[in-house]
Length: 69
Image 1 (tube, rainbow, N blue to C red):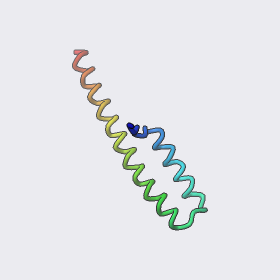
Image 2 (cartoon, rainbow, N blue to C red):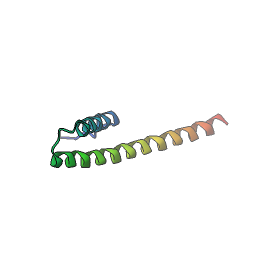
Image 3 (cartoon, rainbow, N blue to C red):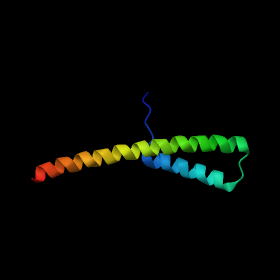
Image 4 (tube, rainbow, N blue to C red):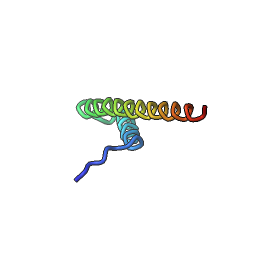
């Protein structure tokens, strides 16, 4: 059975939910800390995802620029 890695939008939605939960002020300190930790993990994953996309765009642009000359 293969496990599909979550995409950017799914990760962002989870982070948005965590932010809403933290801003609500209704979590006890233990749950808030766990949510905060998960939020940091998500930020790292999202940054990595965006770095990968940025590198791909640069590579494609460089190829396109070479073909256009």
